Amino acid sequence: MASKRQGKKAGFRPKGNGTRPDGGPRSAPPVAGDRAGRSSDVGDKPDAGRRQVLKGSAVLMTGLGLGFGRGATSAKEASAIATASGTAAGPASPPSSPGFTWRPPSAFARQAEVPGFRGSARVVVVGGGWSGLEVARQLKALKPDLEVVLIEKRATFFSCPLSNLWLVDRVSLDVLTHSYHDAARNNGYVWLQAAVVDVDRERRVVWTDEGWLTYDWLVLAPGIDYDYSPFGVVDPGDMKRLQAHFPAAFKPGSEHLTLKRKLERFDAGLFILTAPPGNYRCLPAPYERACMIAAYLKENDIEGKVVLLDSRPEPGFEPDGIRKAFRDLYQGWLDYVPNTRITGIDVDRQRIETNHGVIAFADAAIYPPVRGARLLERLGISDPARHHFAAIDPVTYHVKDDDRVLVGGDARPMPFVKAGFAANYEAAHIARIITGRMDGRDTEPLKSPGIMCYVAVNAYPLQSIAFKISFGWEFDRESGGMRFVQKAQAFPRRSRALGKANIRWGQGMFQEMFYTPL
Ligand SMILES: Cc1cc2nc3c(=O)[nH]c(=O)nc-3n(C[C@H](O)[C@H](O)[C@H](O)COP(=O)(O)OP(=O)(O)OC[C@H]3O[C@@H](n4cnc5c(N)ncnc54)[C@H](O)[C@@H]3O)c2cc1C
Image (tube, rainbow, N blue to C red; front, side, top):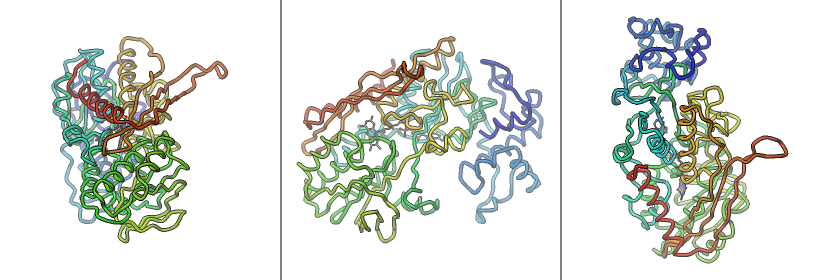
């Protein structure tokens, strides 16, 4: 990240297309991107080694959010830290964290444990969600001699798609959860379980909490983060409390487990759900979840009600099919409140302030607006003007000043749906861009076929509605440039057949991503 600027300051220039920027062997340890970063300085000098640890120190600060902003990794601030502490190993204790005992971050200073480099080039993919898993799989299919390393911090894959059905026991947990070992073994790539904390784009090095590794191409697919600030919640402590008590359950894993427990214990009162403004992750999911929870309350005769606070004037996707389900199935079990602006949330007193008044609730899952994953901001490749989604060229997918780094999945800034099926389709396109470029070929801009997507609206029996959607770039005669188009065709009549197709679709996707090499 900041090392890109450091390299420029020091007059560092990459050596040209396709070579590692330090010109050294792939196993050469990276150094902090300061002046010592010229190839003649790499590696064996003791103080070069210390600088490497120092860079790691600064990165750890940033990664753990301990009071040093992302600028802390700049050469200037890193050297200020070293000067202040009198040691290159970092300060004895970060000033903003009195109880914290500083230890040198040895994890950063070693090479990550991945198999020795044997392929024609190494592509590192960050994020093992719907995008990253498919990018890795498609790359191996297109070029089997590539070394592909998928870095994912979680131990187990947990699917958001179908999770609303799992909340009300219409699919079991083992439908949603899958092993990264299986995905990697069956598709011929390597899975490194680690959290990425920094990237040195000059030297093409990824820093993780399990050590560093070099890349020839890097694909970032870290998904989304939440932005609670429009609700007036800006203090990190308050955000954590809100997230712990009333998680959105729009990021996979613990949040979903918490929500399911909440539902199992819920016995009366209002259960608040929210649908935020903007192009949030999975436009139909808040409506689907409202239907599933209302169906559960109705089926189990629980004296409660779902209240869906929607920022929009009507459901953001297939309003006819969704409102019909609300009307036909959930009168008395679900209140739909459109045009709602949330202005404050009192976690302790369980009250939510809105433009319609204050609502006291028994329980809630609060879905705030989304932003690009914080990792992108830390790496200096997010666009603050576009909710910190990736600052990439929307047609070629690469970071604006670096064609070796591409971003896919929900972290992209393009206006099409933030959905697993879209991330999955686009992943094959990203893999084609990379392998095409390796062979000196350009790839046509993305243009998807119509892809079916299902939204469950009843749980007992399981019934879904559906839509067919296509998205991509078209040549625009008027402007002489490319124009983005998205078209959707609705199938708003709910049916058991579409309910079954919904589950079959998810199972088919898991089968492909985890168990079926191309
Ligand atoms: C309730 C719900 C229902 C949905 N239903 C559907 C549906 O029916 N159909 C559909 O198509 N879509 C659906 N979606 C949307 C779908 O889940 C997302 O669009 C999809 O997950 C996006 O994929 P992604 O790879 O971009 O992000 P993710 O799937 O979130 O993956 C990102 C990955 O990056 C990892 N990561 C992040 N930072 C780091 C780091 N620093 N180091 C290492 N790893 C990191 C994360 O752990 C995560 O595994 C639904 C979503 C929700 C919440």
